[in-house]
Image (cartoon, rainbow, N blue to C red; front, side, top):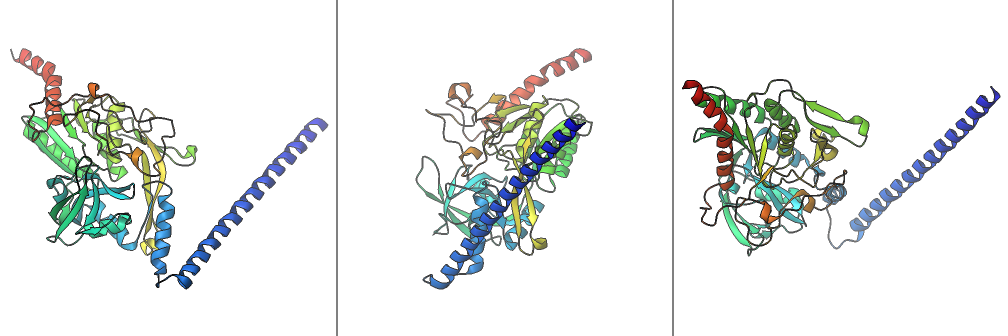
Length: 436
């Protein structure tokens, strides 16, 4: 008994010492934080007293917040009151502007992807284009929210943006702002093959997909024989919408999981039973502009063996952001990276992207592969915590259009159509045999 009591006393002593050391470390960290805050106050006071002109302290503090969040990762940021309202409008599906999803890369506003059927897409803007001026005014080094404010505006107003593209001299693009009604989903029968393009994931995407499937089923005269699901240049959007879209094509099971700072807080999102296509073949089209929520859908259907992915590797954004209103939105909001997400097989695609099952380039590759604009190129991008790296591509492993291919035609889509027809051949042959 004495030995047990002694052991307990020793254990208590060790535990108490550990608690004391931990508390002391926390006190030192707290003191260092206060010291840094005092330093910030000293710098602000010095600017106010000695700077060559009067400075707007509110703007300085907002810029300091932007810098603090930008030092975390490319997707954490401060949203001013106006920016917060713009974000709410954007996810609701309508705003005035050009139709561009942009981010900061090497201190330049860089296009992630143009949104389908908008002035930006019709003007031929591409993923990776850098916007260096708006109406002749340089935006090099300007904060992202300031640059986007310059590009947005009342519909009908003209705007000229100066674009820097790899392998070309800077050039101007003249556009006219429009009400960007982000039609998140478009669909049609292409030579009797069901085709659906999801351009973004906003509040209406799931209902739009359901409407599209119903229309396609009516056009097909019954159940769909298969589907081409085009996710190219889809910058993502609302995560919950990606989950409800993915589960339409899964008969139960996991869609995605998320994990925050504490691994014990892992959350799993599962599909309800009932595959809308009843196992019919699906071909998903991707490119370097396929990002975030679009990668959740693609990764889920690929891992679950439910779809064949065709095209080029995706963007590689494997993190989730939470928008946190400040004082109910009266002080704007924080967009903060709070978790990473994982495909059903437990893969993180952060900075690595999703490699298609069939690699196909939309254009011929002359010499080395062109530089791709992807998550791992962004400043302060999170590393892949599992140690994964983006797969090096060999041009010889990538199918390319023939030399005489008409570049106005969509080669990747044409190949997906051919693959879907091939997948349907046994089914068609069985129907013919039954009828005979």
